[in-house]
Picture (cartoon, rainbow, N blue to C red):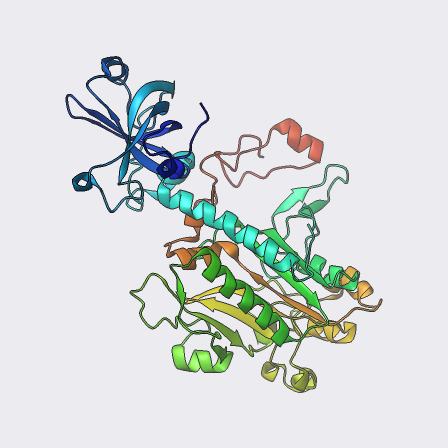
Length: 479
């Protein structure tokens, strides 16, 4: 008999079916034994009747999270026994055959409920169990649905999906890089990309014109509720021959249509999305990512907005990674490739603090869920920005590949990179971005499920020409 998924059972009323899944709950009422069976599509109640004595005896040892397969008849429940709060509360399966596929140890925590009252590190250590929760399965499906929608939406609009390198060059872009030793070039390193920023601009030079990818990005920066440590996913978009308005219209249409198609229970509070200047947002709301929901108690309300006209520069702090000559007082408000507002270009020579950048931030319910800009496509202006942020000649040389490419007919271009994890966190009302990532890092930078990071063997380090300094006494092969 062919397996039937639980969400298909209404098609089989009074017909035999075979289901496979996990036991969520076992209830023994003496003559009757009930199992709630769960698969990826939902759960359903199964009953073992007194007439099936052989089944009841074989079910004695079965407990929660055992993997089983059940054959039986699908029955409609009597009206007085219908559970209207459950998707399959109006049906049940009368089991005629029960087979244990695999037993289970008692889980280290209760898999019922949302799990938010359980220690997070314990949940992450046993993430393969935590992901069995309906809430977590919903979040994983949402990730997949969003990715599918994005690909179809953008491909239909002449965009080409291009994968850019994961092993790339370390450059001073504003956050710490993750470094990977290059065995074939001793003493040299690759870096994991903080974003595909430089590659997507090179793709515009290459004539791709409309590019996207669901890109993995890596940044060694401190975690917080809306930012996972280590890695995250962003929808990376770049377009040639566009103005800022074109990017805003595309992104607003994409996310509005996505919400209405995939999450019909959600409602967008204002369309078109409000647009705020950076100055007005800070003066009126005290933040450049205001929460504009009309009713913050409504979990289905989505208040999108745009924040525009950011200052191109901010004052440089000790934490910035742009120090070179020691003479600079400026750091990029967004990043060093953001174009100044055309009306403000002359201010680069007189008062850079007054220069506005063609930056745009996508805001949702008080979170910045995406950012982008029109890029600099004039090598002279790019060099000027490098000077203003204090790059020395060595740091400038790190970007010679960009400046060289810009001498071969670069089109005006710009883009945006919404963070998919943060978008889903805000959309689904989760408390942390880690709730929408399958295997996230803990707050102290550990992938608890795999016990990462670990030390490398002496032989591995020797082959790479690396000596580990013993800052951490737990590393056995350090000196």
